[in-house]
Amino acid sequence: MRPGYFIQTGLIGHEREESLRLVGKLLPSTIVLVRKDFSDRKDLIELIHTIKHLYSIEKDAREPYIAVDQEGGNVVRLAFLNYNPSNAFLGNLDNLRFTEYVGSRTGYDLKDIGIDWDLAPVLDLSSPYNQVILERSFSYDPLVVAEHGKAFIRGIQRFGVAATAKHFPGHGGVLGDSHLMLPRDERSKAAIKSDMFPFKEAVKEGVASIMLSHVLYTAIDDSNPATLSPAIYNMLRKDLRFNGLAITDSLNMKAVSKDFSTEEMGKRASRAGADILECVDIDRAMEMSQYLEMRDEKASAERILNLLPSKKANVEPPNDILNAFALISNAIKKTFVPLNPETTTAILYLDDTRESIVGDSFTNSRGIIKRLKETGLKLESFTSDDPASSYQEYEQMIVIGRNEHLKDRYMAIVEQMKGRRSVFISTGVPADLGLFPDGVGYISTFSTKVDAIAGAVFRAFGYF
Image 1 (cartoon, rainbow, N blue to C red):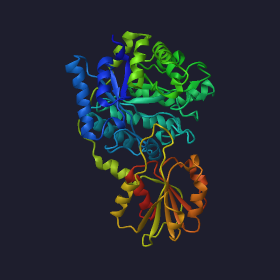
Image 2 (image 1 turned 180 degrees about the horizontal axis):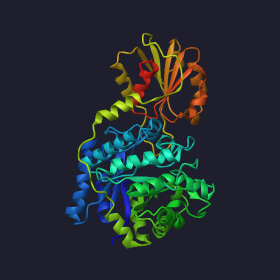
Image 3 (image 1 turned 45 degrees about the horizontal axis):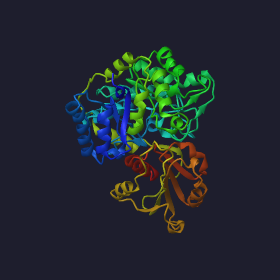
Image 4 (image 1 turned 90 degrees about the vertical axis):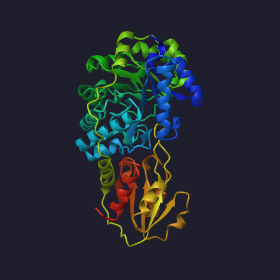
């Protein structure tokens, strides 16, 4: 079996033509695409066609699985699709039928484009101070996470797209960002097993694949992060009785690449029990492929071959449902007197710097301004680049921001909101709720999606 068969790589590192030339040499069984790899839907479809032609016609090889991270919320590689606001949004709404619909909508859209594998859903427990997780999690409650995770998996796999439960055995118990460093989870084995509950339920649901985390769980293995740990893979196979495909998180992330050589990562992950080693950097993936020593090559090859679930549905789930829920399903976290729609209101869009490398969806202030102009509301728009003096004269104020508990600007924002009717619209998790005094309203959208924010503005004016 060619070494590339056990690799998932991307096109990162070169211009497209050169990356594809290297892909033709390695012939990985799966390629993961990111937003910078294509310009729009048409370009993506053409790229997928080019990749499949390279394999089937030029190389006479089995076509690779095309994968993406299409979680919804702030992790959406295909921004042109109508995606779900976030897992936190779904968990807060707590409507399992809707979550299953969202999975179905995602599966239908991906299959329609030619994508086989979604590296979602996240089944980590919520941790409002873990900058990697935030609104990517359904909840802090393992029961809620498990039920919504299963619903999403049912929906997406109905259309023959493989789902991925991640990041086993749970990334929510640490604060560090594994894109930048190796987090250590020093809790007891019992606490870690509690975090595993959603993954157990996902296995019962028939999830196609599980991604392991770049976290060091000292109570289980104090030498290897989960992606490189034989003990963690054994738990996955024996305790959870998982027979599907096990994939590492990307091995170019600093959590592992900082402390382990490419050779060490390749040998440790393959010996430990990974079926596929993800490494989005094509150059490093090619080097790593030389060092693979698969624990059971035949079993891994079978799991790869049988990754995709059978397609059970063809009818397109109606798009209108997603739009409607995004518009009205925000949550008031602090009550307030509704703003007067007859009074001109200042609306301040804070710069939306992402908290983690993994996030790639930001507050689209242009899109929101355009959307709100269509309503006829009396709004004057400002950004954080405008001096505070430019919006001090307004009697009413709406501020749109996210996760202010992770930033040091909130005192200045609160000062601007005092002494007038004001509402803060949070597009992140409501962990910053306590920063805002009584009298300042707080609405959480759990999302940077334009419809969700527009709906929160309508609620600020008391329309529903």
